Length: 357
Image 1 (cartoon, rainbow, N blue to C red):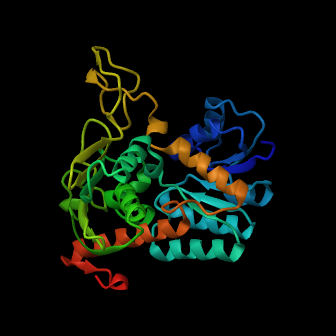
Image 2 (image 1 turned 180 degrees about the horizontal axis):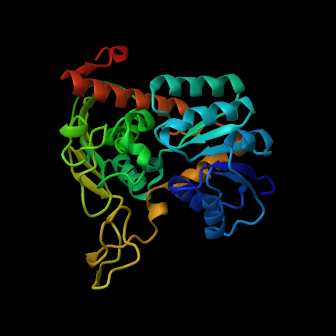
Image 3 (image 1 turned 30 degrees about the vertical axis):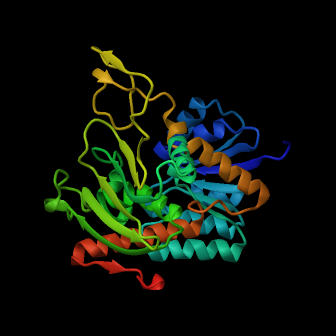
């Protein structure tokens, strides 16, 4: 294919590395033409890691968006910056990829969706779970009727705490573990059920001194939500920052004729015992000594690789992404997260009046 999507990557830290791995595997249809980060040493490090040569480096996103000839702006920045960068990109007539959550407030997310509409451009929402091979296989098993009708789903993302200083304050993150981690199970379930939830009830640890472990964190370090859908199924969605031993992405599906247990992070085919320790096992693992199950291809198994290719293919065709990966889907996920916080704070069950729940 001769035509390639020209990408301006904004941010060169943690999430940018996840996306760059995807771009490095679809060079047939994508080309990184510029990278922007306020710390140019991070740009250099990222470029060296992936062998990038012909690209421009910037330390100011407004200048980068104004000057770079690109098709899409990929935003890999702290949550509170997603809105401002996206608005600038749409003003310049670019498509936008935004990492999760779409924004820190529903109002900002709505402005992003409206800006995309006015510009006639696409807003893509990076929900990697929807491309995780294990989850895709699990959904195909459901479709063939192997476990009957699904009745209940339990899904969680948990680890010991964010490495980012921006995750410590609600202003910069939008909440605690539910908006930062729980956005994945929430987004997955909304995509699976076409957003047709009827009611929810939630609890959180509360933040600061009420947290289990992270007393200096404004947002909660534990949260759970029970949500029901109009097809009479239910789900328990959990996120926490109190899980030691590495990140847990676990989904359990219970049906009338069987059940499934899906582990996205500890399903390695390798089991290793090491006295000195490995250089890396899985994301957020505090130690690598003793027995471990080192990830074989973590970024692929979590869905990032296929997610990036999907966005590039959509850009080439000027098409919306599939359900769960559009700006409106990111907006709906954030709305549900906010209702989870409202339910927990006020101790109430919330019904979706749009569906008559």
